[in-house]
Length: 79
Image 1 (cartoon, one colour):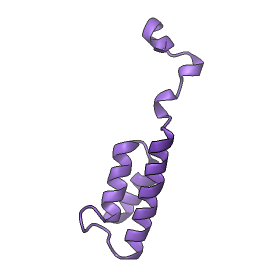
Image 2 (image 1 turned 90 degrees about the vertical axis):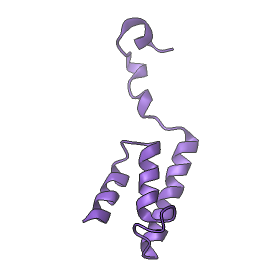
Image 3 (image 1 turned 60 degrees about the vertical axis):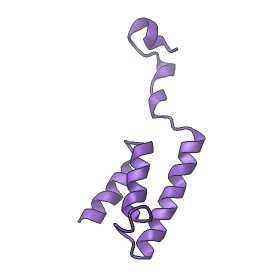
């Protein structure tokens, strides 16, 4: 329960809470970025399906839809 529940507005301490990722999510994202880098070095840009840079960046965005780095890297793959 936060202040928005009662007032319809967020207090300063509630601001940005929805953007805070859990430690587990942060570690998953870090691992996925490492996987993506290795996949790129090995030429696995879009395939195989679950071992490509594309799939790693897509998984990152499922965890953190606002991850700018993953969005940029996906754009680079499509260029």
